[in-house]
Length: 450
Image (cartoon, rainbow, N blue to C red; front, side):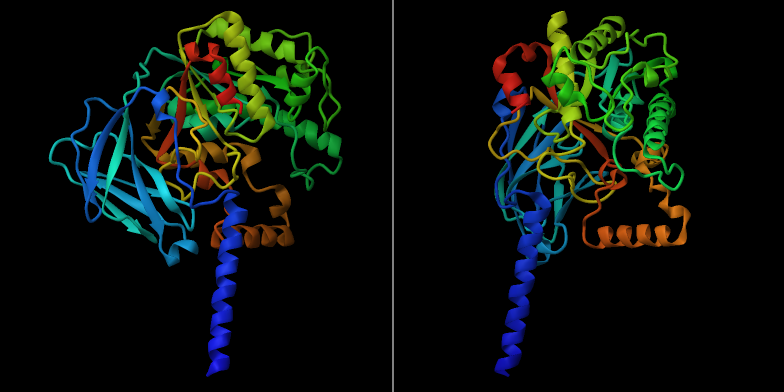
């Protein structure tokens, strides 16, 4: 009997250790920390609500479009091994938001826009999660509506970044997609087709540039409004650190951006001497800003995105804005590669995207904007049209196809699915908003790039 008890105790301890270390490896931060945001810097309204048995109601301000309720939540035992999530139900609206396994503390839960009128009860149904009775704060943002005539410029550091972050939004407006690099770098995924690596990466770049010009057509954007500048994937840090000096492609040796830029069909394509250096990139962006005169620029949040091309793309845009002295307009900032971990946003396809984690009010924003996709799953077809997001060509043989199957199955079962088909096909696209006028304050720049 004692031996059996010891074995059970050993297994429980072992399971606990596995759960603990799997959480540390997955999230790279303590999931028991409170999320803390610098709401005091933004234009918003705070309303208090009493949560009782998972229900609450509130009288909202008129015309708000993005809202969050801050709640203290706690994962149950099963919430260490399965993702905890909450269903938010109000009237005819229903949404789901997932948290980290083992979550403890303050989290901000998206509220479907339009709920909260007088006497409407909103229900929170917790799964693998406990939400105790508590007084909660509701934070509401009223963003200027992006009118149909507004010009939206989407900055994509690589082909597919625009679609991952903002296809739903850009397809609803007058948009121009500006892709910074050809996207020729990365894994040798077409080795079954191109054995020679140099040829592989040249063809990969050519294919991805073509994707960046043509896929936006699925969102109503013509090739006249889809431009690839042809800079080289993974080289923006080198360009920024050695500003006058030109670089070449790390994978192909090509040193002329016109090799890829020549595929553009747009008359708005900046003319280039072919040099891949930082001043040339700034000049290219300045020309687009002057010619297109966007009201909204959608671009990565440098402090939230670990990819250096993403960070530097936005810093180049900010430099161009400030050199031109632009004051009227807004940046809508996204992350496709969260600095903390590559699994964010948490949960499954079709769920809500939450505000990215912040634990010390380090992120600056003037507002937060959540754009609800009319038909979220249509985004699957857009991502599928991007060659680099598909399985590599190893599926052409039986052993390769079996390996892909086993990897995919394992990632699904162990909650390690990092594909954009899970992460980007969501009910909403979420952006931290920064006004052009705020970019002239040093504290804003420090926060964006901390």
